[in-house]
Length: 456
Image 1: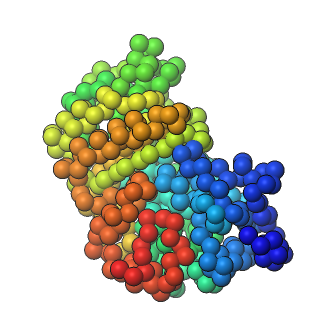
Image 2: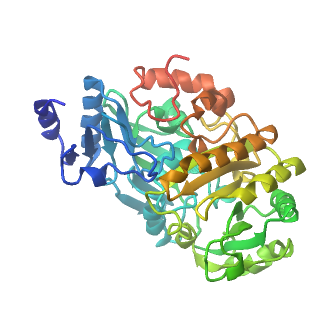
Image 3: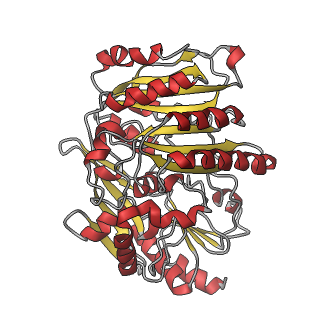
């Protein structure tokens, strides 16, 4: 790339440009998923909104591929590229909590851990995911589900406003009343419409929770009991179901280490003193191998598994929505879950009933409001030499579940080759997201995502 051209961009920035040959280049270009070893021509470490506007204009005018990186957790590697420009927001992590209005405004480079830490000080929380290192941007733009979904809805359901830099470098603030179409599209439409430089979320009075993981042997009766229980469970109870391998944790007997197990990861956000009573039925489902359940700050629950999933692992995920979990689907799980290749890998069922379902399917770009579960087969492992074998296990497991799943899936759980599923992922909302894409990004500058093309 012409150095004079790069210098002109550099002169418009308060942040930093990193290029091949710079001492920090190899470290700066890394993303969470070690499978994506890309070499961008430029990495812009934006210091603020003005830098984002300059970088977007530069990419648009120069015809460059543009990758936008918030937390960098994208399993398909959408936060990086070869030969293009990576716009990195990691230095934009300002947060302001308004305890009276119960809102928080957070910049686009923030992680869940950043925001949870800031809001916990006021006894407040907004519904996010399950790993503190996840970026709020990608999570929210895809929908955003986690422990508090049944009580509070999706992350995008709690979005009140967003500051966005669109494809022509224009800065826009959107709400339900202002630039309403863009605001609608951001809530589930992924990174297709612009760079969100800050998010404003509604907060809820949640500080300490009662919960943690409860482990069982791999047993179909446990899965059936979970399925039946979660349908009518109080909405204050978040309970993810996991098929995984027992890690060498101090509360799990050594004889179980490295063996396939199931787990229910609980989060009771109601009155903490009621937690033991609410969770008691779960312990009757089968033999409890071990548990780590107690009162804890909400941010602690969101960081329990961070050490198990450090940056740099190989990741390959596939997912679906399901309106039920019939016995044949449970049999498919029991057939494939014993083959779980390593302790970092897990298949998770996110319960989606409760507050999420009370939002109309056409109220946001996120369309699958009737699903009972969002399923993700989250392959993660350390050695790249195991890629082919482990990816095959994920694909075979996914194919076995397809007869019992909806056609569409959660965009944040899609693999890179799932581009053909984009239309069905948005269901009845697809035509509208295409029209909004045409208006805000007619040249498809923001195409490193599960792409909504401006021409259907």
